[in-house]
Length: 257
Ligand SMILES: [Zn+2]
Image 1 (spheres, rainbow, N blue to C red):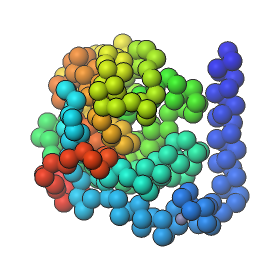
Image 2: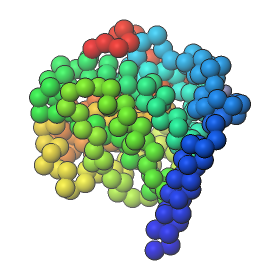
Image 3: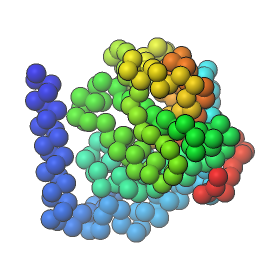
C-alpha cells in the first residue's frame, strides 16, 4: 500500500509540472535558458548526434540472440542528456522531439524487413517497448518509454499496435554499473511474455523498442522472451546506440521504406 501511495504522489507531481508548463514558458531542457523543450542551439547540438540515415547497431561484443536493431543516432552527450531529462527529470515535454528521432529508426526497421512490411498492412505489427526494471518503475512511478513509443508509432502508418507484452520475472541489478558480460547475466531469463498476450504472440511480427542501446543485453533478453512465446520475427529499433559499438555499413535514406 505504501508503494501505491508513493506512486500516486509522484503522478501528482507529474500532473502539477504539466500544469506549470502550461502557465510558465518552458526552459530548454539542456541549457535552461528560456525556450523549451529545447532551444534552437541545443536542438542543433542534439541533431548533430543523428546519423545521415538510420543504421544497424551492432554491440561489441554482440549478445547472443540480439535482434537486428536500427538506430537513428549516436547515444552520446546531448542525445543521452535529452533522454535522461525526459525519463528522470520530469521533462515530459521532450516526448515529441524524441519520438520524431525514434520514428526514422522504426520506419527503417519495418521497411527493411519484408515480413514486417507484410504484417504492417496485414495482421498487424506488435510494437513492444522494453519493460523498465521494477526498481526504475518504482522510482519514476510510471514507464515514460511507452508514451514516447506510442507517439513514434503514430508516424508509421498501417496496423501497428503498441503493447506492453513483456513483464519482468525478477528483480535485477542496476544495469548502469555493470559491464557487458554482467549485464547479460543480470538479465538472463529476467523477462517473460504476460500470459494474456501469449495467443496474440504466436506467429506475430514484433519490433522491440528501447530509447538507447548500450550492450544490447536488454534487447536480446526481450527478443528471447518474445521468440520463446512464439513470435515469428523480432526486430528492434532505438533512438541511438553508444559510439564504441561498431555500426554495420548498411544504411538507407532517412524516411524510406
Ligand atoms: Zn538550450
